[in-house]
Image (cartoon, one colour):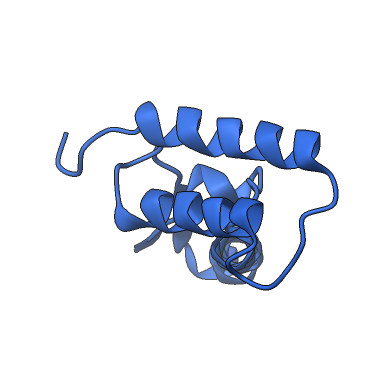
Length: 103
């Protein structure tokens, strides 16, 4: 038998403003690693597929959160504007280079 888990590259590198999502993908990676060892005696292979970025609503949500933080709409002040600006640039570049679902 074989178990195939579908993860994300966010399980390797956590980008700003998607921490909970990245945490879930790191957890799936850990579960897959554990299951691989635990199920090996029964000949059950376990693997993790980590596709590249896919254009989904998560990117717009993270961009919106970043904008809200920058403009103060969340009630939280962003201290390091240059750090925030770099984080937003990373999110925008990642979103812009994402593939459409089904591609």
